[in-house]
Amino acid sequence: MAKFQVNILGCGSATPSALHNPSCQVIDFRDRLMMIDCGEGSQVQMRRMKLKFQRLTDIFISHLHGDHCFGLPGLLSTMALHERGGRVTVHMPQQGMELFRSFINYFCKETPYDIVFNAVSGDGGIIYEDHALTVEAFPLYHRIPCYGYIFREKAKLRHLNGDMVRFYNIPVARLQSIKEGADYVTPAGDVIKNDILTTPADKAASYAYCSDTMFDHRVAQAVRGVDVLYHEATYSDDCATKAADRGHATARQAAAIAAEAGVGKLIIGHYSKRYIDYEVLVREARSVFDNVAGACEGIKIDLL
Image 1 (spheres, rainbow, N blue to C red):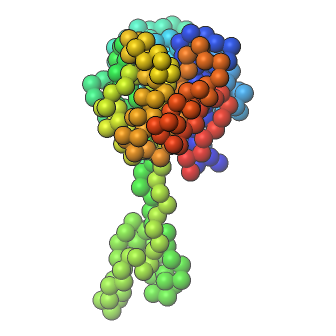
Image 2 (image 1 turned 90 degrees about the vertical axis):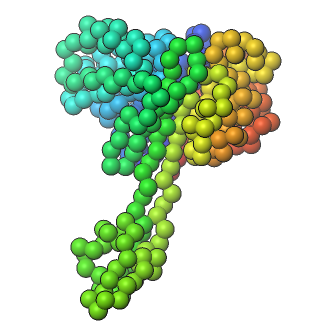
Image 3 (image 1 turned 45 degrees about the vertical axis):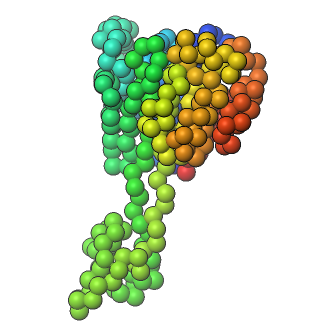
């Protein structure tokens, strides 16, 4: 079972390319699948990467440009043919959502599962939460309303020190509170400090997805300290003016955001079709930030 894994299904930009598929990623969090963007062909890529439609519960769309959402009707229709039940929630920017909802309702009106739309607007904020994970939306700076998403694992419980638990004969009913950080008071009134009874919790992981956006310091503020950052790098530095005009970033700018934010690792993607070898973009990014990798269809990135 994957604990926290990012699957790259597509990392190309808007113009079709024989080398890359349009934007799409799937987060596998404890065997639950959550998709980010859904460019054309995403359902085929799911099959190739052996990601099960039945496990997909949420889809997060960054913005309503076609290379990030035109695969959604086909995916939802295919999922209906598999006769899956339950519910799929589509999170997307409020602008244009009603038009997209009408389109989906027309072509997928007899699905055996419920399709729920959740509008993302304003400054975003936490738009999904369960017992172990939150998903936070934050504004990006593109030509139309666009959002990035941060997947944060919640703080984990401390580990019990079995020898100490047995030594102090601690009742089972008290173990949960001790894992949560409580001290233990013996029947005689002695206080046994928590750090004697437990060892530190495992580190919680975090992943930020920054789709189409020009260079902006507010992005660095939003993703500060995440373990892994995916940031678009459509162009190299010699196309910086074109990048700004089209609401995109260069590889060097993506690396500058990673450095300013103090992230652990940078993944770049959303490559323009002009680049036959995306390593030129990776090298440019590494001139600013050391820990850089290039996205490529089919790769899996383990956060835990």
